[in-house]
Length: 271
Image (cartoon, rainbow, N blue to C red):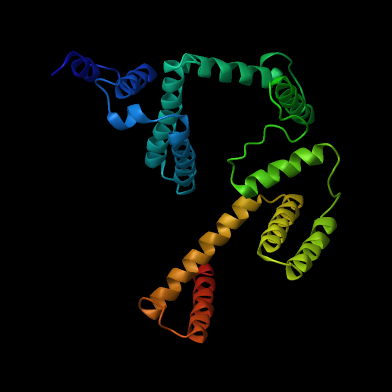
């Protein structure tokens, strides 16, 4: 057994330093893992997104054992990126920790500085501080919509864009406006001139539906997620009633199965 392996066995596996040492070893060109050593920021970026979603999934499943594991996987992504940055003398893991500590203290003056601030002022201070942070960033992207991550899921990003625009006063005052706009956008879908125009108009419908949901205090991403789950559950019930694959069945029978699945759900929900 080599010295590094022996030292690793003696390590405190609850220590962040141990994880950092493991990642440094994996990235070692001579003694590490060829796959880990070959990665760069872009190549592993998708894994950070994937791990974040798996964290959320564990929470929704209320599986705390799996949540522990998924949080570890997400933490690994932070350490992975920090290690690559350290190798290029860009920043270190300690810099990452220092940055988030400073940000949390800066954004919570009602905890670390002022006291007895009401909820309205807390929210106002939070938005003001975030706006100041954005303005201080060296970027060609400026204005009220600056800094909204382009990699966000489209519905989540639409909501964030709308919320930022609303802070400038550019928003409907109630649900009537966006509801009327949905009908207008659907009419434009019907009148689309070609495929590209159709994509654009359907996108406008989805954007406006997101606005409508927001004015009802509903997160469109979460609402669609629930609908996905509902459809998935009903489709599985259809297959169970049919005794297997429903592909060969005529559409009329599939529609009957769908109605039967809905009725089955309703009867179970009453129990």
